Amino acid sequence: MTAKSDTPAVKALLFDIFGTVVDWRGSLIADLTQWSVQRGVSGDWTALVDAWRQAYPPSMNEVRTNPERGFIILDTLHRQSLERLVAEFGIQGLSDDDLHYMTMGWRRLKPWPDVVAGLTRLKRDYILSPLSNGNVALLTNLAKSAGLPFDLIIGGDISGHYKPDPETYLGAAKLLCLRPDEVMLVAAHNNDLAAAQALGLKTGFVPRVTEYGPLQVRDFEPDRAWDIVARDFGDLAARLGC
Amino acid sequence: MTAKSDTPAVKALLFDIFGTVVDWRGSLIADLTQWSVQRGVSGDWTALVDAWRQAYPPSMNEVRTNPERGFIILDTLHRQSLERLVAEFGIQGLSDDDLHYMTMGWRRLKPWPDVVAGLTRLKRDYILSPLSNGNVALLTNLAKSAGLPFDLIIGGDISGHYKPDPETYLGAAKLLCLRPDEVMLVAAHNNDLAAAQALGLKTGFVPRVTEYGPLQVRDFEPDRAWDIVARDFGDLAARLGC
Image 1 (cartoon, rainbow over the protein chains, first blue to last red):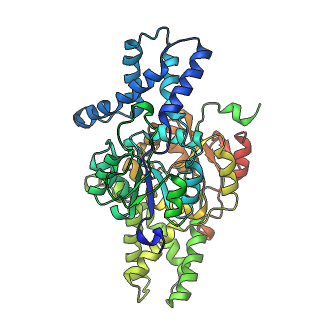
Image 2: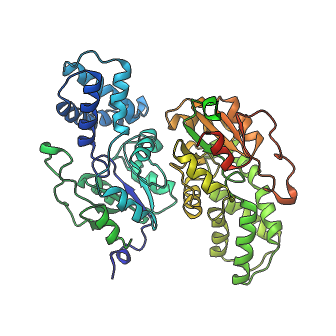
Image 3: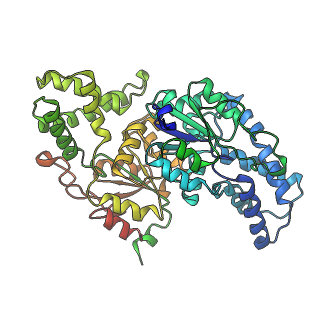
């Protein structure tokens, strides 16, 4: 019996992006370091990137808990956090174009080495989409630059909600005209999978133990017996019979 | 000076689907004819397909002009129209599964012969998406079955509106974080292009003079000097410098 026959109903695989599909930390540190040399500005880019990522959950929670203010896309949250952080870090001389270039760095992130080959195999048998807090424009440009062969793009601005709001997981299933158990979320984060599982989605865990570099404190292992636990996207494809 | 330099700002090409990208009439007639032989039911499938297509604009207008009833996706409108038509045509013995199979025929439509090669060339330089009244699930399955290399899928259920409502054209530009004049609608229908142009989008016309078969009464020629008029998708790619 193959792994595929254990999950006969799954028709679409939805992927968490930041950390699961792309190495945001390594990509941004490399991108900003290279750019800063050409641009002639100096800063502790590793510390800035780590602080930028730490600003991300609270900035989304601000949106999630104040729906009356309207939905704000992740590109805008990234820019707002960056403006605060460059001031805090005392990085001088940045123009509006510089801040835009840096913010668009999230659209230039690089995938983990196993991703493109794994997705290419999976695409033959499954509908593939991000299910990400990134906005559609960010994710579309990221997928295009990284060569990620998604069939469609589901970002936070599709449902007007950020994960783990139920509207994100259930909205994606509804958009695809599928039942929640016909959809599998693939993520490197146990809390994302727990939210999806509670709503009836299938779950696939792929560890990314270097995502946060020396700051990584969780998600070294699966917390639960998720429907699939795979070493990487190649192993995920094999376990799904692709 | 190439055509590309005439339209330096365009970053995304949005495609009307039914008629422009896929031959809905020829595909549905062939699909239903083949299925009916295997299924052992008889009917005038050409007449049914033509009537089914004629039911489409009024069914959308019913949604457009009654927003208080909520948005209804095209899969559902197709099913509702079909149920009425099989009764009118006196087609007997169809089960719920049969009606479902027939309705899903809109997800199995075949592209015009120039489409896949043209889109593949265009994809290198442009973001490609449908901008269709089809719902996302319909379009996603259609793109997958037909091998259409879109970067993302924008259907009517993204904006909750049907063309020519402005929310469809402007919502697509907003979703991509682009100005309207950075987006080009490509369509075989002059009225679709006129609505897009009035909102500031760029326009590309590709004639599909056999779309309606012997019932075709319009769109043999461009009504205006659209930004681009191309013979087919290969010519469109050439004129956009791809």
